Length: 240
Image (cartoon, one colour):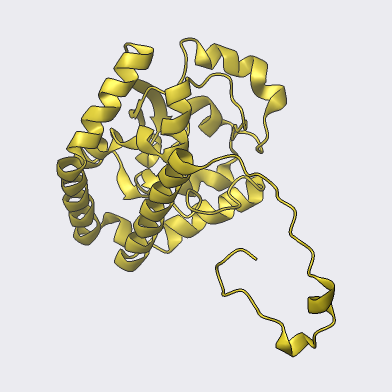
């Protein structure tokens, strides 16, 4: 058994329940806003259920806000040749299955909000290996069995790593680190980074504008002839 005993401790369960209740209370207006947004742009169903493997390989239905068009799973078979991530992961930069609103929800992480309820029921934790759909989970070799020693999570070392799609080996390393290095401090660190990335992603998606390249003016002849130490420098953070 490779997992840390912390994953089964009362401290972790207390953290999960307290944070889930806090987020559900304070994010309730946001939760309602996402429900109305999905309903207005895509209709019903608002939620998406998918069977995944959890603790001890027990199947459970993971909840998300629906982000894709009807028939997305059937479309996936045709898109496999365009997969940009190592199998069984699937990643496309411009996945045509997403609705316009769904793409925003997925990139910002807001589609995961319904999983707070599954933390309260004990099916999931805030921090743990990300649960995989059953077919993908069954395609992994036995050396990945450590993933099922603990509850699956919304966040993990893999979820917050910038190189998470680099390789299958890197993916396994990050998930194993999540399972082995369980502690209250580690959970808070991962949750904090996940929250930061979520806020940053939303800010970027809402404010990002196409960059316009401008030519930097060349220094005058007089400036070029000055000694290097006597030239004026722009303050840090400003544009020259």
